[in-house]
Length: 239
Ligand code: APR
Image 1 (cartoon, rainbow, N blue to C red):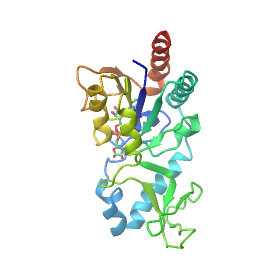
Image 2: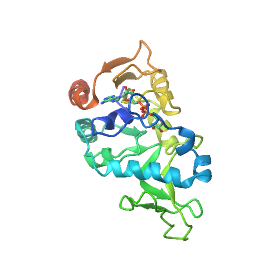
Image 3: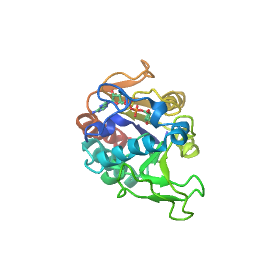
């Protein structure tokens, strides 16, 4: 059966660059309510607090670089492209570290580097406007404040039809650095199993959606991924 590969990444893939994950010690949700900064209701109730939260994360992103996991994924994608093997990288992460390493991910939870006008739908990419206390007006319709182009809790993730197409018939699925706590991303593993795919999970502790059918690789993605992806390329190449 021809290979078709999907890789899903979560906050753990960017942890080795120095960006905080969400859950676990020092996570973004530690000492903070999701409802206060990552829902449409929070944005309408206290847009300044929400804006500060994302401006803080954008400022953190401007200080970090892609890590060995991002680079290994970009190299893997290039090798598969050369062999005409279908590959889709789906990320829950809103940072641009995959792109800066050379990957072309589907950002199902949106992007820190993008802002969106809720009045006219215009999008603009502005990582420069990092003032935590200054809203950015829409350059097209002058609506007073662009919102973060992030998928908040209760909103529909982006690229779902492209992701569903990629999951259909996938033969190899990897989940890298995700706790398997948030759907629909957490459900991709089960879909891959149902497709008969080989399923491999890398994280620091076993995610909630792991089953005995899955291969679990414990360790930091920056350390584990280069060797794991080389091994998989060799296996693929052998077929
Ligand atoms: N290498 C590999 N895995 C790591 C590393 C690392 N260096 N550091 C942490 N991890 C793993 C943890 O073991 C955990 O399984 O990364 C995962 C981080 O889990 P979360 O913080 O829950 O992040 P994530 O799964 O991406 O969250 C999903 O939740 O809040 C929402 O929208 C937000 O996209 C996010 C979604």
